[in-house]
Amino acid sequence: MATPTITPFLWFDTQAEQAAAFYTSIFKNSKILDTSRYGDAGPGPKGSVMVIRFQIAGMEVTALNGGPRFTFSEAFSFVVSCDNQQEIDEYWSKLTAGGGQESMCGWLKDKFGFSWQIVPKQMAKLMSPKNPQHAGRVMQALLQMKKLDIAKLEQAGEDEVAVSR
Image 1 (cartoon, helix red, strand yellow):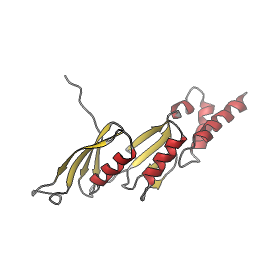
Image 2 (tube, one colour):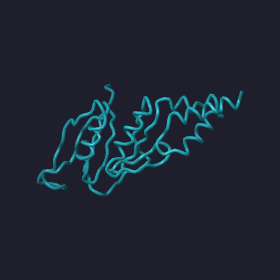
Image 3 (cartoon, rainbow, N blue to C red):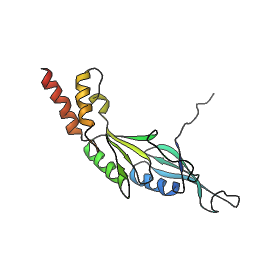
Image 4 (tube, rainbow, N blue to C red):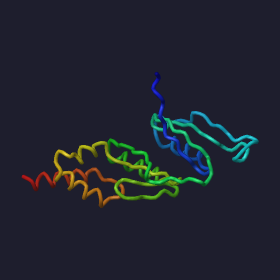
């Protein structure tokens, strides 16, 4: 039996094509794969995008212009694991551009209302359960931030190590 392909499917009101263009402009290894348009039978306007399939950072995504019935929530988001502060700053800036909204703890909503988490790759190590006091100190620092600051998170962990000596 073949392994199925599992991909995210995003429901937009009418902005699927604009979102796909926006996302593919931000991330490397991204492109529009194919587009289906509404015909005479509707329900969308003839010629408008019905479904668009695209790739962002190598991950395939499908987006539908399905009307206003459903909206995004933080219950589903994309996590961008960044190598360094420069990447965090860059993705944060690009994804909040044009009407996006900053939230807390590395979360943001882009101009389409979709949620993203922009985090350092070493986040799991910083929050390691091997040292609960260390993780607690890092968590306290994280809770004070909107866009994450790697140096401050690492400093919070170092402070805890120094205190425990």
